[in-house]
Image 1: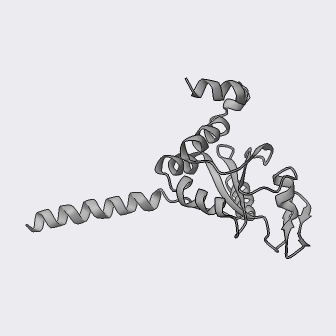
Image 2 (image 1 turned 120 degrees about the vertical axis):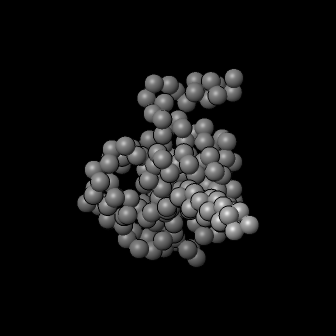
Image 3 (image 1 turned 30 degrees about the vertical axis):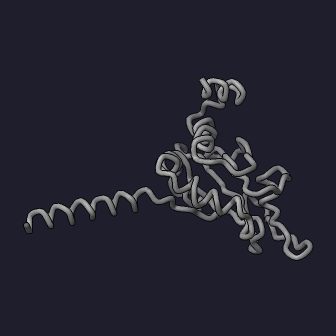
Length: 174
């Protein structure tokens, strides 16, 4: 009986550790810059989730898409995961330029959000960057897990280097 209890506890503990290992470590923009600088990491790209606190679709994507086990595993392996609040008031200094909050109406917007989304402040928008912080693409809108993973793999697996999005998308629907 004690043997069975030990076995169940061991299995439960192992499953708990596995689940913890699969949790996305969300970084700030500054933390991602620092991590790449410290590690000299050219393997992982940067993924930025540009969101606002009031965005319902952002919350849905957090709850459903980013919690999907397949999405989590793929994103953890291939990207530094960044959360960026498009309405944060703290300045961000990047590559010698200071990006600031711009008050507008009741809230405002952050200049880095404008830069990352190519001026299209729509939420959620996810942004794919190379490990050298070169823009691959901002992708606006909510995506359920399967379509999200299709887009993520296009950038994460470097498919974009050899195939247009249109051709890749067509090849996925076969």
